[in-house]
Length: 96
Image: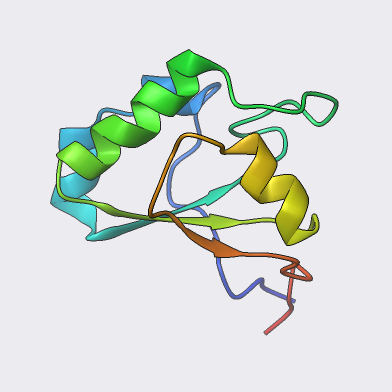
């Protein structure tokens, strides 16, 4: 079975993805929280990753954070990044 959302590109770190490149592909970037933006056992986003998320928004991208964690965990991890859309708990992956 295929997952409803499947990646077109893979990278070792989201920090290697240029916001202007992503903007050419889409208007919205959907990001997982754990092990993408924040290591699973870390409570708050690293400032380097927070700056990268802000650079996405500066490039005109809408950013959506999707996580299987509870919303409180996600909001705490992303503290300081205002106005992000959050889908949590997401119950992913969903099969098509």
